[in-house]
Amino acid sequence: MSARRLKVVLTRRLPDAVETRARELFDAELNLTDRPMDRAALEAAVRRAEVLVPTITDVIDADLLAEAGPQLKMIANFGAGVDHIDIDAAVGRGLIVTNTPGVLTEDTADLAMALILAVSRRIVEGATVMAEGRFEGWTPTWMCGRKLWGKRLGIVGMGRIGQALARRARAFGMQVHYHNRKPVPDMIVEELGATYWEDLDQMLARMDLISLNCPATRETHHLLSAARLDRLQPHAILINTARGELIDETALAERVRSGRIAGVGLDVYEHEPAVHPGLLGQANVVLLPHLGSATLEARQDMGDRVIANILTFQNGHRPADRVIPAML
Ligand code: 8YV
Image (cartoon, rainbow, N blue to C red; front, side, top):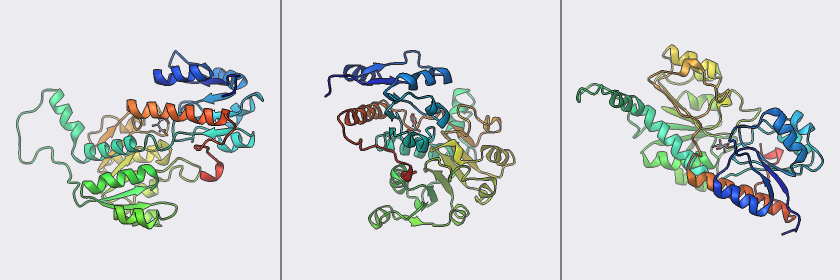
């Protein structure tokens, strides 16, 4: 390890063990308030940091990067998604950008499955009845949801998380279908018994449930536009644990209000943390506050990946988690 310690600025509070390790290894500045840095604070951070460690709550756009001093060398994102970072601008300035893929795959897939179950089996509605003391006894026709066994799940984006969800869905007896830029390797298709749809529109119109598991990019913005939402079958359930920008949230709220969509489970929002008011207070809509990677284990692992990426860079090597524009 080189004697000089890198100036590393963490924009948010991270798990204690991660912050402590960062202090041991680097000249690390912590954000003890746990409030996101405002624009002025971020500008000041990129003027003094050699390595910036942001999270999804920091917008690292070209204007912010234009404020950076020549000392800034690396953006080591705490999180897998990098849609809040202008990768072209960062790489154009010669910065190394890294993320933390892999370590939150299983947890995010668990949460997608939890939303599938919650919406299909009306779990939140049922729990609310109990919490409010309104349970008057079992009835043959009350609170019936939809069976999962034998249903078709269409996964949009068959990367790590999509595949982890597919494995869970198979265990629940579901038929896995998927849309992806290209088909996944035969070995994985065989394992998952998955059917590939090159045409997203065709897949959407035939599924019982849809789960979004692709990154937010220029190409996937409003991937589920009003027209695409109208392709869903009337009984279809839509799940999003990826990014809010993938869905036209206003169009979705209109369809929830008019009863044109049977059920929705969301962990992410187009204008996070704001949620379209039309989605609030609806019995068939389950909303979670971006909990995909919210396990103690995943957050620790994400921090470990950030530290490993910085150390690799400090030691003069290319970090394995480097994000390059061609990957997006
Ligand atoms: C993270 C996520 O917690 O990693 C991601 O892409 O969506 C989240 O689960 C968040 O991005 C932290 O920056």
